[in-house]
Image 1 (cartoon, rainbow, N blue to C red):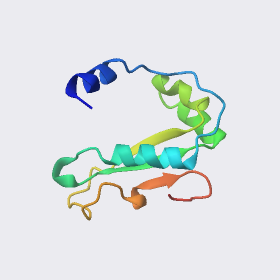
Image 2: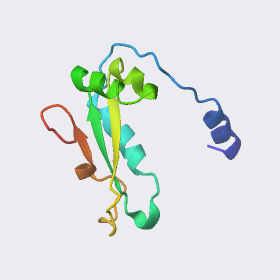
Image 3: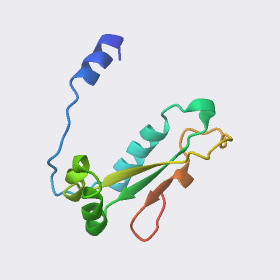
Image 4: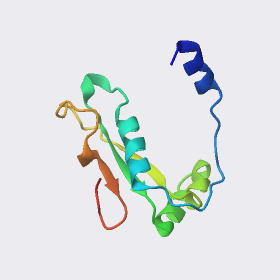
Amino acid sequence: METKAILDFICRRRSVRRYQKKEIAAEILELLMKAAMAAPSGNNVQPWEFVIVQDPQIKEALSRVHPWVYMAAEAPAAVVVLGDKSSESPPPHTKYRKDKVHRDTYGQKF
């Protein structure tokens, strides 16, 4: 993709706050997490963990944490990003670390 096309794509993005009541396939969630974990971090420390939340009660509780998160209650899935401020040494060099993605359902990991 050429530079102008990429910039046009980025500039056309929009926020979505109304969602279809359709489940998101695990394969799609995994692909999104791979993209998120490909983000650069200083010294490749990757000081984050991701929690994929699909449980309606947990999403409802999350929606009350901050006024800008109200839409989490109605979304089919929400991703909570946790930052590890104590992370000092880089993990094994990899773009996608399955140990950094968690699911709320039955404690399963990808």
